Length: 268
Image 1: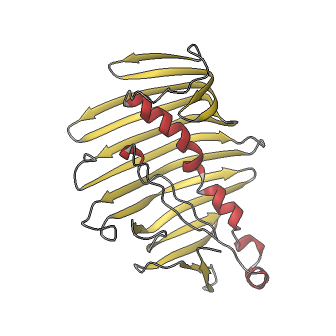
Image 2: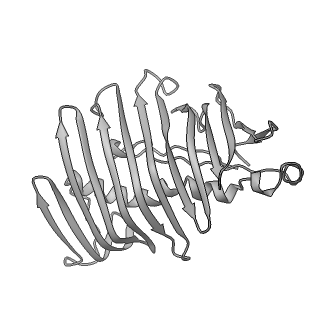
Image 3: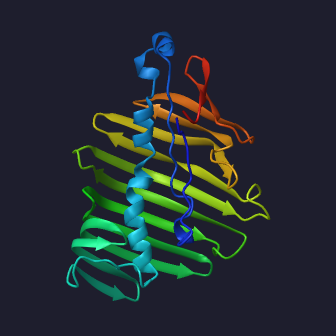
């Protein structure tokens, strides 16, 4: 079972380290001992923490437009499938059945406003009925970048207030902030990323609150988070997830409200 992965976009460092996937499985004996309400299923947590991945396609498109890269709108279905308006403080793009950067059926409007001061860059993206391959996004995502990506370290904070509607009709709401950090080292092992923040995800009738207690950390030589503690609270009942002492392994420890602990593998 894959609990957590980090995807690096080498073509655009602005979106490096924006995906965190976490899944927890609990045995039937554990469910009997602590009650169904204390159990968070693998599918639930994949949905909870998969919203960055769902919005990642839109992020990539927005980044390409922001950087005005030549490939941002390559492969469009026809020369009239989008209308773009640029200004000194932002831009807006309306798509109609476009194929953009390898993604089909891009529709809706994206509006971006941005500011820059010294080494701090910030911008806010507003999605208005924006859809990619049947996934629709509405709402805002704001980004604040500290430090330049060609230096040894940088951080960026993503604050979301958005609704994602999946092709099957599932509606996911996310609010809150995540802060991602990265520092370059001499080796993959010493190139470290961190994740911090608090955010809330609502799916159907369930609400999940995610809070990082101890900053999550990993490195580019390991496929898993190697340390840090986070809480996932389902409808008010919290379960802690401890990712370890810094060693690269596929084990995390789940800590239940009654103090019961369980080690789970990060891979099947």
